[in-house]
Figure 1 (tube, rainbow, N blue to C red):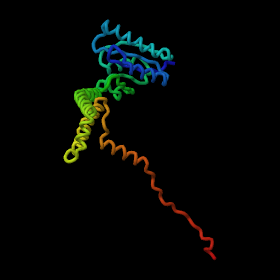
Figure 2 (figure 1 turned 180 degrees about the vertical axis):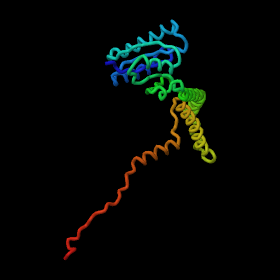
Figure 3 (figure 1 turned 135 degrees about the vertical axis):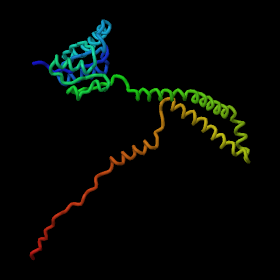
Length: 241
């Protein structure tokens, strides 16, 4: 009896690492064979064939040790046309595993076969967020260095001139404001240095809205269901007396 197959589809000369891992895992669990297909938009040329066969060998090296049969074929055209032609040649194709992004050209409802899309690369949104995060961290380099030097200078000035500082701080009158001013200066410089340093390391403070949502979720989980009053029947033993 012919074994069930999983169609591993790639619109490139190579099979991505995530695609190979996902396809082999599904084939092992569902007891299926792999039918690996590399698609070229135009006619398959020798360089594409050589690169595709090399990638196919890597796929087979991951599947065959687990007892999973793997067959590779090369086709040209659109993914939808290739799938339809393969369905006429091969039987018992249970599903398609591909790293091709969802599009009108690859619609599982029209092909009457389930399609599993594997994301081999991060989405544009994730890439944008990573770029923004790295750019934000870069902006904290200069303030971190400047405030770090300023903090070291303030501490050094206070400790190296301890006698002079104490003589002025203990004179009384308006000199009493000098310790308070010094504390504010040290607090501002050191606090700015610490803030930029944490931001440079990628550690940001939790926003109040997020904290409120978390607290609300915790409170809702701890709530217990209100007990409804139950009706009890009571028989008076002296009813007929």
